[in-house]
Length: 413
Ligand code: ZN
Image (cartoon, rainbow, N blue to C red; front, top):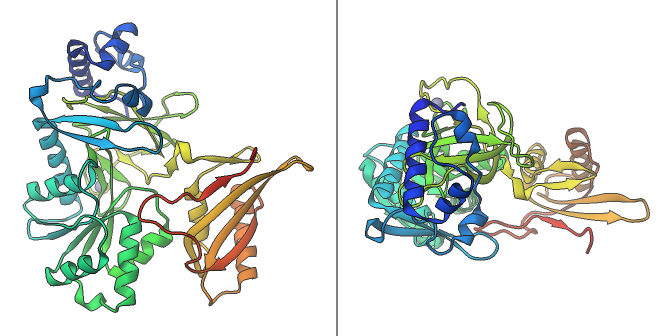
């Protein structure tokens, strides 16, 4: 989707604001000779930025307004090194809540709903974003935060929560618990709004079925406000992204080349009106594509396809690029297999070949060796690699509320 004249004018304003602020990026743009953005060519000359830049600018080097205009900071931890600090102005906080309220509306949530919010509160953007959007919409927020399943279920039943906001892992855990305790008739949930990590259809179908709810994927990242910058509509054809606040590009993660709509690559986002920490052409490392054409729902915003993974999660076997989401897709096609798995990659020096070993869980209804063979064949036909497959019984592999490491690369150990 090409940048519109209105969006270009907003980027131009952002560049001038950044240059005037003297912040971390003002130096980079001055060195790159970026002074104004009048045309698409000007825009494409703006260098990409990355989480590494935000770490270099720690703690507040990217702040582009005077201190008296900053009302809050958020922080994303990341897996390595220093955290990233993002300052917000009152307008940033309000714009974020406006976008988030829009997300709820697109999902059909109204002021009459009771929204149980289970993502964490604090430095993270998660809980507080769900909360601010809920209050802007006028619905009742039930600000639970994560964990304490006992209390979650009690509140869900006693208050008759109608909307559950959660990560897919936590929604799954609650669904399993509700199923195990036979509480299905006591809950009144209608919709689930799930933070957009990549998750398998098997997991999605289980949660939707066990809780009897419609599921919506919400997109966002701390560097760009937080969750709530896009969501899928009831047509379930990709996530609408709010292009009055953001301009989205898809690039080839290796070369940086901008890709046309429909092609898969890394999502790059430019904030059009963000004040506290404006980011231009920020590389998210999330992989997806912009879906061409219009959504049947009539909304005109660009739509992002399901997040397929992270460019940094990609692994290579025999020179073939693979993503955890592809593994999940395959496992989702096999009867009796859970969505948990472990992959070990090693190198067989004597034959100079990579060896990939997949460990998956299956329940007692299915024949383990036949299931292993089915998985082996699916890998062969769909990904062009032939793994060794081990099947273990259900609940053997580790689970966590946060991101679980599933791919272990032993080559060069
Ligand atoms: Zn739509």
